Length: 282
Image 1: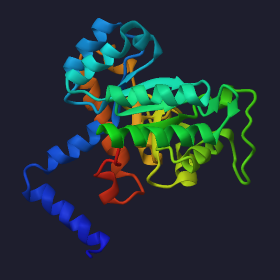
Image 2 (image 1 turned 180 degrees about the horizontal axis):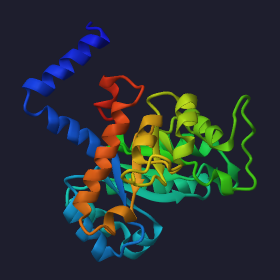
Image 3 (image 1 turned 120 degrees about the horizontal axis):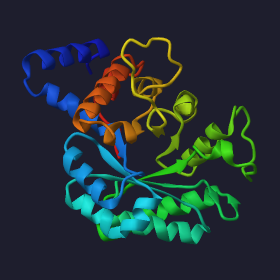
Image 4 (image 1 turned 180 degrees about the vertical axis):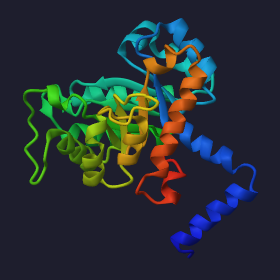
């Protein structure tokens, strides 16, 4: 097997001699960008999908858009050839979460999230059962299995939880991530400043989706805000960005700026080249 320096040499050769290598790399970059449409109405959201479907990885649909458009809205996005992150944070009894997860799977979404706390408190059993039932439905009905994420962004706002503290766990976010991994969920949604700790806790194959990153300001080297490059460099797999794209005069230009920033994060990432040039399996 070739050494890692050997693989780097192959990559350099591909860039120099294979004319499609840039397309492969650009595809990897776009897959890591999720566009949030939470503050758009249904008609505007579909216009945005038509404009950006070929240059971004997914579109995030939250509760307001889903209530307004229902399952048919998700089907309409899928008919346009776009992928969907269904951000409804399913939160109820284990049986009701399980049923909602199955219906989300049947809609063909690429990923969806669940609240790690059931209506009766924190439960790894709820997460484990949900993951198992989704896998079973996919096998029996011939469906693509979506990634299931636990929501860790709400951890700081929840005053009580019934998860016992993990030995050595520095905060509730990494604790939730550990429980999600133990329950065989695919990953978590978390804040950019938590990415490094989650990655160190759960390993390289655990999916990390992060929101709350800021656009890079030209010439500003002192800002304390975290950009897409910072999040990717820290170990995030996907970044969710909304208003900077759909409020831009040229949304395509805004997407290009963000993917350029993602590329900067990948190039400065401590992860190996083979990993960062290939999206994590979903």
